[in-house]
Image 1 (cartoon, one colour):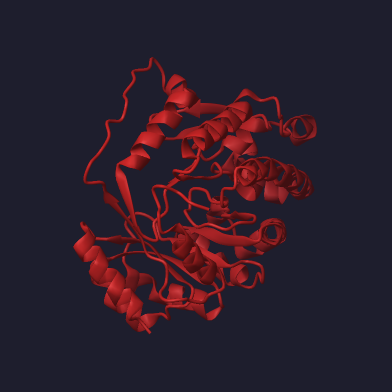
Image 2 (cartoon, helix red, strand yellow):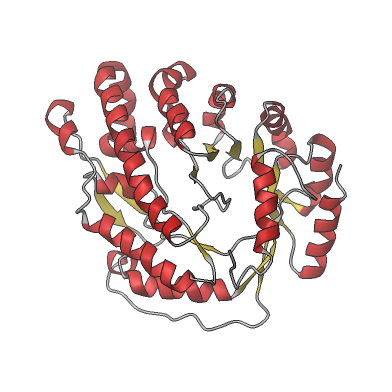
Length: 356
């Protein structure tokens, strides 16, 4: 497998394979993206609406392919393009209204009443936004052939999907007032999701792509990023009762997984998540205003002690503390703020290589 924008791909793939096993072959993977010395112009276009811009699939694919050329994928950074249609696109395919903003999207609930609406909120393979996402994926694959990696779109099944179908505040009430309806819909929608995931998985594998998405790890088999941002609104008891079984099944469905744990409010569920044998790693997102490796050392140590991998987003100044408090096995440096050129990058990579 070769990609023009990543000539050392095979060595990098070995490092990520070792990361999944919480091992190292020479050093932990280190992702460093630098601006290219010579850039190509990126085409521009004006639109009347945000929706029109988001759905101009062919042009978006062309722009992304050009933007890929303007970066250097240093260390273990990977040239990945994925068909971003917004974080609740799966829920749109299942009946939610969908609005496009300048930089993000949002859904409109489609279950007003559990008895009358639940059976209507199902995946529709004929939905124009589903077809657009398939077209977007295929367009990127044409540009990516031999050049860069193409990933899956951002999918949020489980609790986040139900929160979109129903509205987060209403779903929180439903856990008390309509628990059986919630559980039934979770089970039904998960079966749908696995089929939808495989649609895109099969497209990518047919084109000999490793599997990846918005979190740029790779695996040749099923890989994804389980999550439940809604979980910050509920207790551990409710999380365990309603959503943990689905997350366990999701981790079993994938061959490799990294859980997206978003914000201090979700941190209460970490212990439960670390008990899932099939979960490989944790992506801890502390949230704006809560940054700083030192503040979360114990969280990272707990994750590592449980035998799970860690995604780290740190600054150059924090690197010595990482060396002092963690082991290199199972650590992925997804971003190190402060690396501006190859000279600094080389010194950082050498320091990480010497970490024992």
